[in-house]
Amino acid sequence: MADPAIEVRKLTKTYRTPFARKKVEALRSVSFTVERGHIFGFVGPNGAGKTTTIRTLMGLIKPSSGAASLLGHPIPSRAARARVGFLPETPYFYDYLTVPELLDLAGRLFGIPHAERVKRADRLIERVGLGRARSQSLKKFSKGMLQRAGLAQALMNDPELVVLDEPMSGLDPIGRKEVRDLILELRDQGKTVFFSTHILSDVEAITDRVAIIARGEIQSQGTPTELVAQTILGVEIAIRIAAEVPIDELTANAAKVRRNGEDLSLVLPAGTDVDAWLQRAHAAGAKVISVAPRHETLEDTFLRQVANADSSPAALEGRT
Amino acid sequence: MIGRIWAIALNTFREAVRIRVLYGILVLVVGANLMTIVVGQMATNEEARVTQDIGLAGISLFGSLTAIFLGVFLLYTEVQRRTIHAIVSKPIERWEFVIGKYVGMALVLTVLVVLFAVAMLFMLALQDIPISSAIAKAVVMCWFEVMTVAAIAIFFSSFSTPFLSGIFALALWVIGRVTPDLEAATHSASSTIKWTSKVALQIIPDLHLFSVSGRTIDGVTVSVHGDFVSWGYVGLSALHGFGWIVGLLGLAALLFHRRDFV
Image (tube, rainbow over all chains, first blue to last red; front, side, top):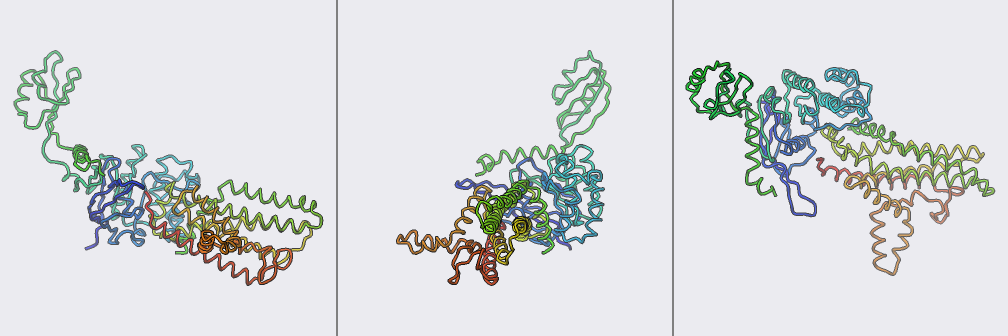
């Protein structure tokens, strides 16, 4: 059986403030595994430790303790990096280069022969939609264009594993969809994609597995379905009722009540006798438009776990 | 390995030639060489001496200052602007990156030294002054001095800010140029001065080796205008410089290897 694409075991990173005894734990015993061929979403709020984890994996930061491997090679490994594509967070590139020059530099560092470099660069420039900007220096690029250039340089070596730090950052909705499509296309090609984000809709839409990190600790991990509690949080109901009919009795225990003329929508809490409520609504002359159970979403899970992390003893101690 | 180092070197060269200050320095040096005509005419029968002295001093002074300037900025800005993130995450060792930056700088500095030397030779030719092999030897030694100073700057830049690196590199360059004075100080009555000088002589590159005009070597006072050192001496001083370059770049690579790029 092949090694996992990424294996992280009890990874810890502690920064010490110079001339002070204060220490900041950026990562606390972080462990997770990314299987080959998966799309893995690494989710967390700003400052959670996503970028620190990724930079540690890519050899930019040395861990204080713990271990990690990329494609079976313990980090930091040049052999592994040769088979990995990496997009840094808010990519900074040499702004005097054009995209073909940037990709040529990346290709040289990967040891790709000249003819192949040119061929791959041409294909990638078109793939990320920068064909019209190929003669412009990166200095003139918008944030979204830089992100596309970053994606292109990350794919120059036709990597087995692609690590993307906030790949949707700075992109408009069309750009975000294109990146999502690109990630799915990479998985279809048999590649593994590990990406960090705090845009939960992207995670729910495309990932096979997710890990939620907050305050330097993994809060939970699994498939998006596993992470979301399967219990019903409530029932969303939409009815149409004459504007002059009083609705106080109907909305007594409800949440998110909205009335717009004859249209009334609300959420009944879990455990409410919905049948009895609907009978009362019928009796009041209401016409039922829709009744739908409301499950927990990934966003609910994320917000709950981040809130738990923020109120943990370590967080309250100020993490010192 | 060579391909990766060369890729970084070429990119560094590309980056450095966009620095406008370099063109200012080039104009300054060419201007100083042009001035030798005026100054030479003021010093009757000393045109050759003036042209050669100003030309060589220009190479040494401005070459070294440019080396310090490039050395303290080019490595530091990679970290500060985070351009290094997309580079060292590729299959390149950090020491290869440091060497690549140095080679790129060395290319730029070599071009500058050649241009400075061409300006001086042009002025000599313009005044019908014969060009001796001493000039070639002196230029080669200036080039080695500049290369050594560049390594000093890169070394400090691997762990310090441009301001501090600049101060340290400048101090080492100045002290390295006055090693005969340090040697004299080792005979001082004060034990503090004596031991400080002894330690300094051990840890500071002897840049005075590259600037021999006026020194007495093997009982002969050498001058670029008369008897000058042999190619053997040039080779030995080059070896000395090369040793320091390797040592300083090795230390820089070691320090760079330990750094976190956050």
